[in-house]
Image (cartoon, rainbow, N blue to C red; front, side, top):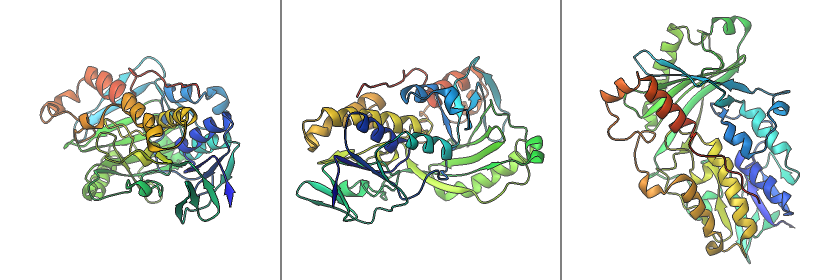
Length: 374
């Protein structure tokens, strides 16, 4: 059985970022994922400059052979009423394709990669976590998303008491005819909030690629809301009338609603496995990256991998993202005062949609990039 300093389960942005940081510090790490890369990943797909800065991504290098759509405007509205369009005056975010972005981050990793390898068994013997009876390490990190098998080891798997956001979306390359008929612009993503404020939909063009989706916290109504939204967008000319394929689904936890423990003896969770998506927007890439950087620093400074030694990770997550006990609003952290008909009026306000919805809730511009020396 091969022995490593750490085993990371999940090779998405969180897992690859952590592995990259640990290997740079001289750790012998194994990263495992159930799929091969590049792989299709359901995600609206945008990252802020803060994410690229924290990852030390060279923007000019990245966009050489990959999609990097500059975003400087947003079109925001409530379903059933006219939207407002706001210009931010500069690039405030970038559209990416997750199949490219995730592969790019994983390609930077030089550690041992075990891809296309489902985790079939996790056991612990004499202080070592053993995966599939083949690999072992004193530290196990769960980075495999909402259904991460590592989360189940500390009682943090999907449960009936979790308030889960369910989303469906599709991303495809438009034909020349579809691109000509599509009125959505690449530099202006569109966000459309459900009238009950329990979710929102989006139309996001990235060059000739188009991403359309909707996410809600009551998934039993998800399909009905999505079908109505898509039909409305077709009728208004925002999207082509002939969409290919089926919409794919995925699930995740909002930070303020998750109750998952983050760690135990010799194990911790990062990214969506820990339920770290922003409560305000459901965006998960930045929390995934930052949780990985925080975890790396804690791991490298810990005297051992006991729960007490790793507790600093949980404390720093709270310092960075807030205390979950104080984050109990529902509906993507829509405050109690933002209800109909007030919400309807506010969604017509250029100031509110730009300063609050976009810059605060979605872009988190008031929070500086996280750049930890590890």
